[in-house]
Image (cartoon, rainbow, N blue to C red; front, side, top):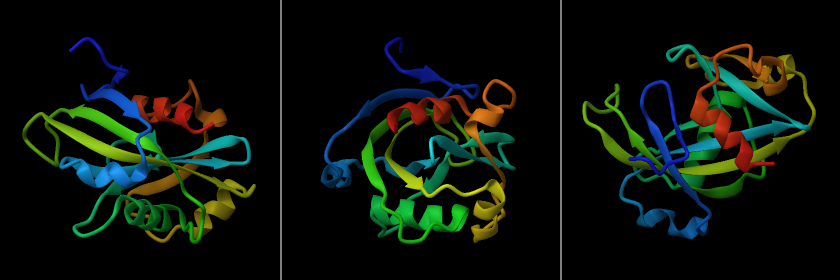
Length: 163
C-alpha cells in the first residue's frame, strides 16, 4: 500500500479521511471507535496514555448499541470530565490496523472524528474534572510537548483536521 496519509510506529496506516455526513456513519460495518481533537483556547490538549506510553488525543471504542456521537460524549466525559460540550463532527477516518490487543489479525477499521473547543482553563483545572484516571494519567498542551515527547503520529496528524 503506497497511497496513504501516514504510517505510525506500530505499523498502523492512516489510509484516508473523508468528510461524509455524520448520518452515514451507520453504514460502516467496521466503525469501531471515535476520537476527539480537543482545543483549549488556541492550543490542543493531549493525554498521556499509560498503557501505550505516549501522548494521544481522546476517545475510545464504541459500545454495543451506542451511536458514534454517544461514544465520543461518553469517552470525553470519562477522560476529561467534559459535560454538555458542543462536539463538531469532522469526518470518517479509515485505518489498516496491525495485530494488537484488540485483534490478532490485520484489519480495516473506521472511526468517527470529532472536535471540541473548551473555555480557557489550566491543565490542573481540566485534570480535576477527569472521571476515570485509569488510562489517561496526565495532560499537556501540544505546544509544550511538540518535538520533545512521544506523541502518537496519527493522533498528531489528526490535530490538523480541527483548526
